[in-house]
Image 1 (cartoon, rainbow, N blue to C red):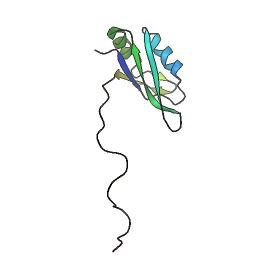
Image 2: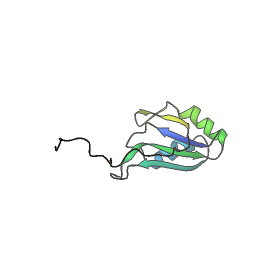
Image 3: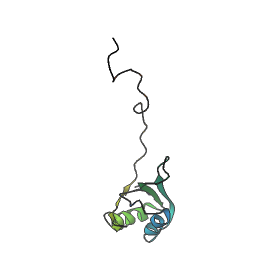
Image 4: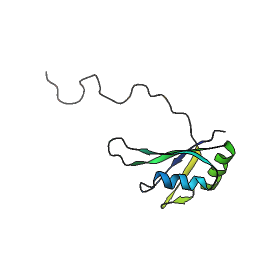
Length: 102
């Protein structure tokens, strides 16, 4: 099992220190990151916490998954590797939408 955890359903009022403190009660926190929106610099409602061992990560999941924090029930599980993005978003290369010009 990995020792990096995904933490979801966070309140937008939760700070990185709040996140670290909640997990520190269950083991040594190596890193706590609250994901922020690039454009608004506001929290996105999720983050990642790295515990020092897989056993501590397991203990934190058992203790915190579903627990109320700032009025929200946390989702805590093992973080999955980030998936590569292919295509998608951005501009479309065709001229669809709008009126016919013919």
